[in-house]
Image 1 (cartoon, protein in one colour):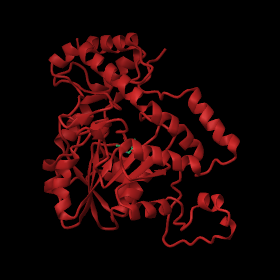
Image 2 (cartoon, rainbow, N blue to C red):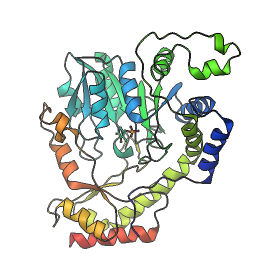
Image 3 (cartoon, rainbow, N blue to C red):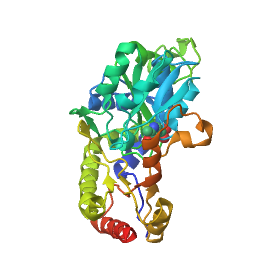
Image 4 (spheres, rainbow, N blue to C red):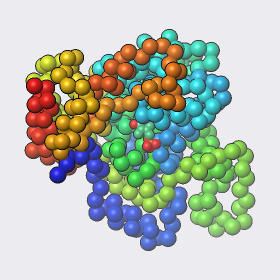
Length: 379
Ligand SMILES: *Cc1c(COP(=O)(O)O)cnc(C)c1O
């Protein structure tokens, strides 16, 4: 039996919640989406949360909310899932790749500052793998210049920053509920924001730019007579009530999910101590927060006896489904050659790291197997 790198923690409660939505006859964006938005906003401590179909669409709307448009520049880490850079491209802007911190894989003021120009409208700060970015340091740089820092908190539900949920202090933040993340709705995402007018606009944009949502028309007595208008070009970025019903259950489980993952990650740290002593680095909490270990990545030491690809092959042969480390967008075809500065840390991390199996159902015995295979490969 293969040890999977990640499986969601779904069960009977989610199945029942989804079935209840189906039995109710209302499965489009409706009351469960509204309830999920409210619960998520309360969990974070933010005034507004707008549920959407994915984090990719959340980032798309967040950049529009930040006023980013054609010919603007958006500073992003290359060291991220490609959707971070793609969102800038969707709004006609140019993603400008900055390097990252060697310890946590996140942007820093030092890597971002040299890339700021007259055209920079936004910085997308990723909480890579769930490790919170130092948002205050980036805002201290960006805010006085009128540049908006959007937080790509795709991985960060359940992480903390300076004692608060990650993303709470962002002007706009985007979350993912894809099954590779902790909290899942199958597909889904959320944009959070501080400004009421921005929230109203993003709600309209996710639903074709409609002035009155279909759910509101349905809910009101005079609904049939309400005429909606379409004041700007919107999108279909909606979440369904089936997804939101699952999300409400998942949100209640989030603290237990994080707790379990943090225990297992610390256990990896003990099991892999010989490799760590030899220079390998297992991702850890940064000084300014805590990670949910959405991605438990290991940086191989210099001089590791076999290439990373061969190591992944060996692990697969031993029934262990590890993954290559986090990707680098500037090494993929759409963005090849576009980096304005060298990105040595990004390239080192992406080539020499791997993501270890970590999920709610991982047993200690399976973890031992992973450690034995890794230490064996290290010679
Ligand atoms: C997963 C991920 C996304 C995309 O999320 P989807 O919900 O799959 O669209 C964006 N950014 C980062 C950093 C991610 O890890």
